[in-house]
Image 1 (cartoon, helix red, strand yellow):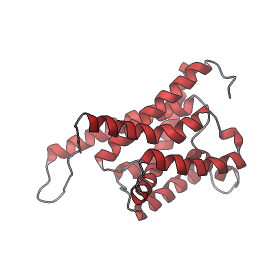
Image 2: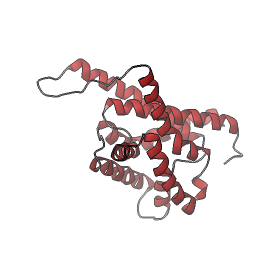
Image 3: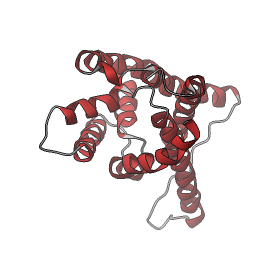
Image 4: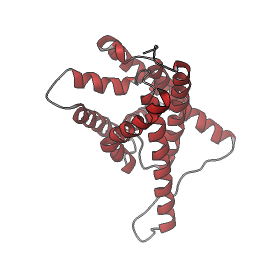
Length: 217
């Protein structure tokens, strides 16, 4: 893993991209259309236990990391550690910056009844598209540098490799769906973004990653 070309560039890109993913998660949470399945559950747990997302994810990811360390050490690298801590704490950092700036912005809540406002709906749709595009771009960089994966992602690979009945794509969809349901049961916000990520985030990241790897080789 650490003999790959341009290793310093890979580490810097990995660090920066994971931080940007955390910023995107913050704004997706503000949009209130849901976030990625893992974050939906972690946000719900953080609310239940009165913890910040950064602290909660550090605890959950550490528990997952122990399993990954036991079952498949090859999945572990700089990217693993960065993702374990930086996504949640970058979310916290953005919240801190907005608080210090005196900004408490929430996207307009959309009602499809008699109070429906088309301009608010279009604002939310536009913001959703931009945030998802940015998230996918930086998630693709994080995956393309090939410096290890997040414990959450690594566990789906481990489960897939432990059986031959289902493809990795099927296992990954079921894995994300399970966390989506868990997050919903815990009171998390499950919306269009969450459903979109369950079924399409993997192929989109893979497609984008092929183009980004040319820059890394």
